[in-house]
Image 1 (tube, rainbow, N blue to C red):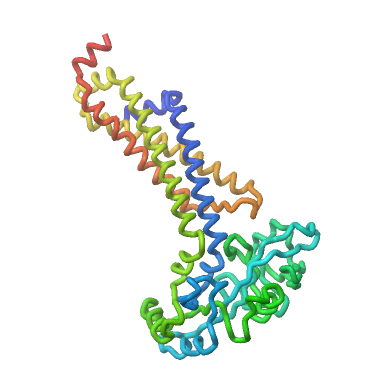
Image 2 (image 1 turned 45 degrees about the vertical axis):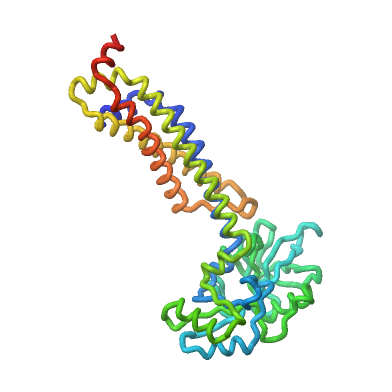
Length: 370
């Protein structure tokens, strides 16, 4: 193994091609992973931020905020449960917003939320006509103090501060009081207007027991009228989320397979070129497993160098891309996961060279080298 590592130091040119190709593959793998994470964040951030144990929808809504209706009587039944500590109303309306200084058709896509229990990272509800805005709106030239004209009715909402990672279905979150949300909904979607006390969903905090028990109690008490979901289950019910994850994971899997094939071909060719050298090593007592371990060590080092270069390149790319232009989110966990997958591909790819290493005959290899 020391001989294999010494070759990397003394003859790096032999491995430049493989390192370059693997670097490009690693960049692609990390970029696609970051794009998946960014898309999921912009689609689910508002729901993921809910600091609750369950979200309750009407059963016929299929866990859609826009179709769900929770009546005050249903909420009162949930409030009376011993496993429930508190509940809060929640609703959303998705609209376009006119930004001061932008063109009349240059609208910012916003999701106006009305809430009673503050999500993670969001302060208590602001005053009437005001909102906490997701930082993604900065890419639409929105600044604190700007008055956005929301929807076709041009309902005014003033931005009073920033919050992070609260987008919904790709639209930036505007977090308002319940009264402000109702006025926006009534003015811009009169067909979806709700009476006082009626919400699209109810968020529920338990008393500290098992969430599954609390969810079962809610659904039993309310009969067939509601469906209660954990935050993660509610995220999975958002249209397109599961499909996006499945599609991108398939692409990521194919990318890892391509890396495996590249490594397998490179080290298979390298093994053929080194047949005489391996024959000499076997003739002086080297074992096949020692030679193969050297191949694996070279593959791991080359892959690790390529992955580190790719990680730095993707981080630089993330810093250069203007916020909000592309839903790219590069995290340490994504980079580490990509590196682990590439190292796995390196080891598996090298395994295809094992048969050739085992098949090297010292006598024939030495004879062919003369």
